Image: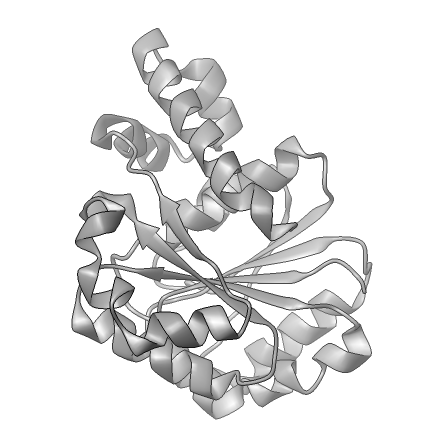
Length: 227
């Protein structure tokens, strides 16, 4: 198989898709992997603004079929570059309407589809996950990311005790925990529009130490996925 397409999703705003996408880009860059970033969050392209000059990047509109066609064409070549897609809120709408453009092309692309689905502790987050599992059935692997910004893993009782978690596990998905990052560090990242690596070189020492702690924890989270 060729390098994967990594979908970072959650289908609602504010769950942590952007910081997770940045974490994935940072992790893969540290491993010296060749990357393409596709930022589909056209209304608030934070990831593109931070990483658009650091990695090969483009923006697409996944609310429109032309955006899905563009995504497939982008994924076609070169096949050794991992394609990381930052999806917008309401992503399930686009998958429902036009997602078959990508799903039907996966076999020919010979790329696995890996989804990192970010959740908070609310019911609608799980309902959207369940819908996404239906929409992408038998196409790739979905890993669930519990965002530590909303509390420790043990506080995700609604998900941890749900049949949805069992469904994820049965389809070879993992449940991951994204550690929280200090607000002052994330605020600096977004305000300066810099990459995590650049932040690690520019921030004050206390902030750099906090950022490095987080980057190490993120690497521990992503290592088992063989991205």
